[in-house]
Each structure stands twice: as structure tokens, then as C-alpha cells.
Image (cartoon, rainbow, N blue to C red; front, side, top):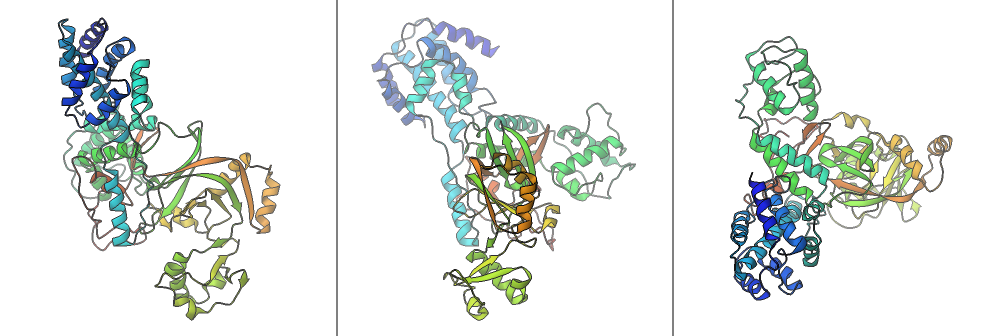
Length: 559
């Protein structure tokens, strides 16, 4: 009813032959106290302070703008962009007795509201400079190279905004500003769903529940799993552990990366007890992260979602290949950035970086003196292979001098890079590659590398990329190359964009995934957002270590 009223109201505004005069526009701008005043003035300056919304397409767009300002797809936090003032001014002008000053007020108010909505969609509510400062402090205090190539958006230019209003279809223009639109709409839908999450009673801990069990907690668990989308709506609620509940439990455990099974233990109870506010916080943080990205990625691209431990290869925006990955340890996080894959190497050698020689190789040589021989690692000085002076090497363990040796692991089944690496040149020297340690893919939290990303299905991915190689390679040729143990570079006929991202909420096949904030980036962002800002960042003393169980129960957000 409200939208119908304003539709009729603004349609009448089209009858006005002209809006406020240039003098009136100038006077209104002089007294404008909006936080967006400077941008609004710049817009009117480009059109010499003439009205923007009162004639032709501008007047028609005003009607559309009023609807967009309250559309939860765009203004999902119901922010005040002056909607009430805009409606009041529109009503006054529609009375037919409006002065030039009142028409100017309406025009400027509409522009101010549009700028507010654009800022919310494109720029967001996060102080990204503060996030950068926290990442840098993390590096200095903890020695953790937490690297994220943050590229916040700015508002469209004044001329772009003017053109969008005058050309019509302001709704199409607003939609074009939405980052990664499909994901945005998914997250807004998830946000709406979890805003409506009931205040479920807190489940008590107790004995594990399995198929055939009967327990007073089961009825509530079914109601909770029905809300989450795991338990069917068509089945009545009772206190019996039936087949439908077993399927729902498997679904829930899979979504939260809990150990697989159809049983309900205290760990699952802990996750079921996650309060609504924690879900909402996580969704809002991920909406802010989207605002770092364009309206959509390229038609063909590779994406590695670090906290999901998952890589996907997209063509025409649909995944044609997926693989689990191992990512960087919490003290050696995988950098978040974008690049382009241009080639791959079969039978790669691995030259151990100086920082890993200090952190890993020297301590290992102290424990296992024959480590180089058993792992086929050769020592070079310049281009010449030389015997290792261990005492000399060990003196470099705790300083920053360039290490006088180059350690190269030759191609073999024991090579740390496995049989193939996929190269997208970058300043961090990270890439996708095979691994000789396949058992790591069995862990829930796959954070074991020094920054590179290890693929579970590298050979399958290699064969897929061979279709876009510069030269043709049949299966027999590839087999001969792999059997030769000789490094072979295969170039692609076009560069494929690679996006290493950090999203902890996503919707997949109708189910909502909430992922663990392994590097604490969600926490940093939340504490840098409007209404939640903290000038500093403190990491918990006890952090995730997937190889060791904590002595005491950690009180961490469960995702």
C-alpha cells in the first residue's frame, strides 16, 4: 500500500516542468548537513547546480529510488538515508503549491539518499584502514604475516551518477553496483532467515544419541534441524531418533565439518546451541567482505576459499571442477589476493625458501642428520652442488642474513610439491600444487602448509588444464613426462584469473555453510565495523592446532 501511494505521488511529480532553480539548489547545498554533503555538492557542480530529479527520466527514477531505499536486498540493515524526509518533501511538492526552494530540497534529498545507498552497497560499514592496521600489528606482535590485499571500493564518479539518473532505470544501475551479486543475494536471504530464528531453549549435555534412541531433547533437536533445513518439514516432531533424524544429523555435521556420522554427541549439542546473534554477526561480516569485490568475477576463473579448504574452477560462472585443499598454518597464513595462472610444471623441483630453511630445515637437521639424503635434497652454492657445512648453516638460524646455500629437492614421489604445481606469479611465492602427504586431507581443519595450497586432486586438475595448453598433450605423452622425472613446463594458451578468498558463510545446494574463522579475520573485521569498532585487536591465547588436543576446553566461537 505504501509503495502504491508513493507510485501515484511521484507520477504526479512528472507534471512539474522544472525543479528548483540553480539559486535554490545552491542555497540548499550550503545548508546541507548530511555526512554525504561533499559528494552531493560535487554531483551538482558537474551539472552547474541544475535540478537532477524533476524532469524526464529523473522524475520517473525518483519513484524507483524510493522503493530501492527500503528494499532489503540492497538496504538489508534498514539504514536511514533520509527516506522519511524524502517522502515528506515529495508530498509537499505534490500539493501543487511548492516553492522553488521546496522543489530544490526534494531534488537534493533524493541525490543525498542515492549517494547513501550507493555508499552502503559499494563502500560498506567497515574501516578497512583499521583492518590493515590490525593485520600489521598482528605481524609485529606475533610474527604472523597476515596478508590480505584489501582493495576497498569508492563511490562511482559524479558524472556516472548523473548519467545513471538522467538515462533512466536507476534500479538497473543500483543492481550493477552490487558486489558478486549471486552471493550477495544468497547472504541477504540467509540473513533474513536467521533474523527469524526462534529463541530455542538451551540444549543440555548428556549421553550420545543414536538411531533408535528416545530422549526428551530429541523433539527440540528436530525443531532446530527443521529450521536449519536439515530435517524435513513434512514429518511430525516426536522424541524418537528415526531415519529422518539420522539423515538430518549427517547433513548438519557435514555443514559444520564435524566428524561424519549419524550420532548426536556433546560436540554437536555445542554447535546446536550457537545463539542467533553469532550467526547474524558472521553473515554481516561476510556481506562486508563481498564489498571488496566487483559485481561479478570473470567468465572463467579459479577460486580458493581458504576457510572452506576448497578450490573451485569456474567456467561461465559454474563450477566444472572442485578439490579439497590444504592451506597455510595459523602462524603462516595463506595470503588473500588475486593473480592469473599462466603455466604448470610437471615433475617440479622445490627450492626451499630461506625463511623455511631457518624455521624448518635447520631444526629438522638437528633432529635427523640424514634428512637431506632421505628426502633427496641437494645443496648448492651458486650453480655448483657442494657438501654442506652444518656448523656454518646452523649459525644462520636466528638472524636475517641471506643463507649461503640453496637447497633443492629433486622430482620424485617424495617431493613436497608432488608431481605437478600450478603457477600464478605473485610476490608471495605461493601456488597450487600436489603433495606427498595425502593423509592431511583427512583432517577437519586443513591448516598445515607454509602458505601454498595443496590440492587433493592435482592430476585431475592437470588433465583439465591440458585442454587449454599451448601445445597438445595426449595421455601417453603426459605419462612419459611424469615417468621421466624431468621438470617440464606446460604453458596455457590464456591466463586464468585466480582469486584466493576468505568467505566463512556460503549457501550450497540450498544448505547454509558456516565455517570456522581460522585466521581471525572475521573477528578483526567485526571489530572494525560501524557500531563495533575497537582500536586494537587481541588474539586468543589458545588458538586452533589441528594436530593436538587442547589441555583445557577452548571457549571459541564454534564455526
